[in-house]
Length: 254
Image (spheres, rainbow, N blue to C red):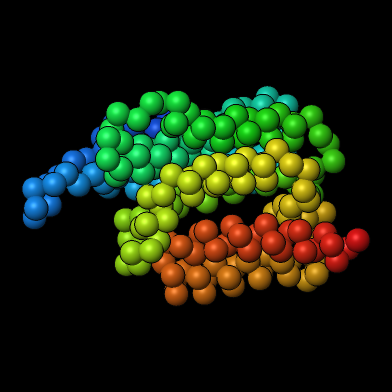
């Protein structure tokens, strides 16, 4: 019975591994336009990775829920959870950024010959996520609030971007996602948010009250309205709302 939550955690890791295969297996795709010029695009299979990362996030929630339900939390489960999260929400999203950087350079003249050194910053994200997880594991104060953005939130945000790329009808959003400077800025911001000690909301309550639940009701409303209005871009909107809401609530408490 006590191993059931650990099996859920391993399923999280399993989905993260499948996501990595989906990201890396197809590489970039090349086609010819009407003028005979090369068109480079991100393979649609990368969107499958987004869905597997989302499944990993669902399982990540359920393993903790099962541990509390069965009353079998363990130090092993805690460490195993961090290892799985590092792959599913650190390595896999980092590879998504790596592929987008490749795509952004491939769009430029001579971009296919770009040095790999320009692509390596993508792996700052999983490094920052690993640091965030390690700090969480040794900090008992993060029971009902977080210091820094949790890696699953950051990972889901990045995992949503291939879906935005494929399904948006707005050319300016495509242009942003094909801009290497956008990705370098995103790497810096998301990495900072994870390694920082900024106070962030946690989906845990010592006691459930309307006051404590209100921020999450607001986030749920933002997500719903965003999904109805902007499709997959709602994930990005919700992530930004989560960060702003967390920081604003801390300022109010102060």
